[in-house]
Image (cartoon, rainbow, N blue to C red):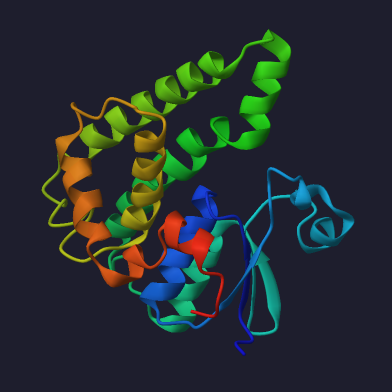
Length: 216
C-alpha cells in the first residue's frame, strides 16, 4: 500500500489539480474521500489535518501538506515534474496564469462562498448558477486574453503541460458543469481538450475519481 495519501473530494478543483500532478510525476497514492456534501471536511478528524477544513490534504515524505499550488511546486522540486519553466520570466507567467484560476476564480466559486451567498440572498439554484456563470465566465475570458502571447504553445506555456494547464483543466470541467458559455475562449478550450487526452489528466478526471478510490 502506498505511503502517499491524498484526502480529497472527487469534484473539488484543488483535489483534481493534485490528482493530475501526482499522476504526472508517477507518484502512487491512496485516495481517501472527504465528502464535502456530508460536511466531513468540518469533522474534528479532518480539522486536525487542515484547520481550514479544506481539501485536498496530501501526506507524503513524512509530511502533511495543504494548499494545492504549493504542493504542486513541492512535487516539482522533489519529483522533477517540470511544472514550472526554467527561466524566471517563464515561471512568473505560469504562476500568474495559475493564480488567475486558483486565487481569483476558484475562491469565489467554492462551496462555502456560494452557500453563504445563497443564505444571505435567499436565492435558489438559479442564484447559484448565475453566480457560477458570472465569475467562471469572466475569469476564463481574461485567461483567454492572457494566452494571446508568443509564450503560449501547444499548452498554456510552451509545448509541454505545466502548472497552468493543471489549473485550467479542472476549471474548464467546472465551466462545462455549470454550462458557462466558452464560445469566446477557443484557445483555452483547445488546450484543455488536448490535456484531457493525456493519461495523467484522464486518470484524474472526477468521474474516474468518484468510481475508483483504489491506489493509483
